[in-house]
Amino acid sequence: MKGVKIVGIGHYCPSNVVSNEYISSLVDTSDEWIAKRTGIKERRISDGESTVDLAVKASEEALKNSGYTTEDIDLIIVATTSPDRIMPSTACSVQERLGCINATAFDISAACSGFVYGLIIANSLLKTNEKFRALVIGAEVLSRIVDWKDRNTCVLFGDGAGAAVLESSDDYGIISTFFGSDGAKGVKALTSTNLSLNNPFVKESDDEKRYIEMEGREVFKFAVSVIPTIVNNLLEKSGEKIDNIKYIIPHQANSRIIDEASRRLGITSDRFYINLERYGNTSSASIPIALDEMIKRELIKKGDKVILAAFGGGLTWAGTLIEI
Ligand code: UT7
Image 1 (tube, rainbow, N blue to C red):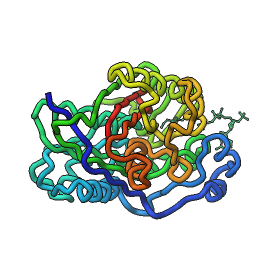
Image 2 (spheres, protein in one colour):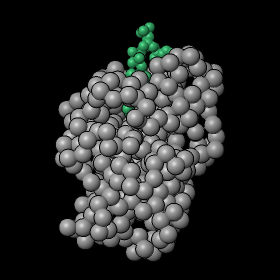
Image 3 (cartoon, protein in one colour):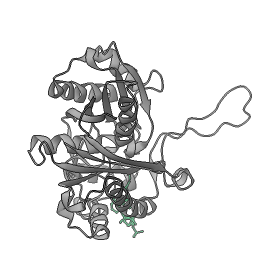
């Protein structure tokens, strides 16, 4: 059976850099608290660009790096928790803006695990020859669903997008995959945007809720246990040893989560790539932004094996072991 490879990657973040000091002028917090408890120093926040704008710019770079044209793409999957609209999908808007006339386009909702869910879905469709070349995007303007009066959440998130072009290949780029969800826990732990039902047949409609709400400690506990689960599962499925993995690229939520996950895995935390100090938590965009940065910085090169490990709202989790 054929394999699937990533052949191009790109990212784009808004140019507006927002420091911890600036956030401290909005809510009762401090640079010291945010840096010590999360590792975050600054984040990029949109001053007008939409989720589609960010997705298109990241995709243009990924396509350029892949050497393919928009017409070569026959599948577009966008993972987002902060779309510009419910309909059409972000993916269809990206298709229109890029002119990917041959693509089937749809969105998926898996919060911060979304980009890796997208890779896993694209991997399956490409392996079965249903599709041949995919554009998988994680794009977020989370600043639109952040409550800028809530210090528990507004210090954490940032805006950005990352994209990857995948194609079916005789080599295996994507070596093993693992994903799952736990709605029973997730429905309380991490939520946003509750659309009210308000029609002539409803007596009392719910209040519409726009903002992210999170039980931080519950999500923290989940994250530190699920990262080792993902890594161990991928290693077991592939028969690989952790020593042969050049880097683990985790969802960028909190450096303390990464420290604790590395302790539980019995490896040093420098085996994980961390860039959250500059971007905050960009949800589905965090892993492709990190992957693209690492390739540009030549931290990873062709032939290196890496593990992507994502977790987030749902609760959801997803990982893949890939050879670059
Ligand atoms: O991508 C989605 C996945 N999300 C995550 O992975 C987030 C996981 N959770 C976390 O990263 C951490 O739980 C947080 C960073 C959200 C919070 O850190 P924590 O160490 O769990 O803090 P806490 O919620 O237990 O709060 C400790 C104290 C509280 O004060 P008291 O009750 O001890 O007096 C909070 O009110 O810190 C207070 N606090 C703050 N103080 C200053 C909470 N947020 C802030 C803040 N600035 N921004």
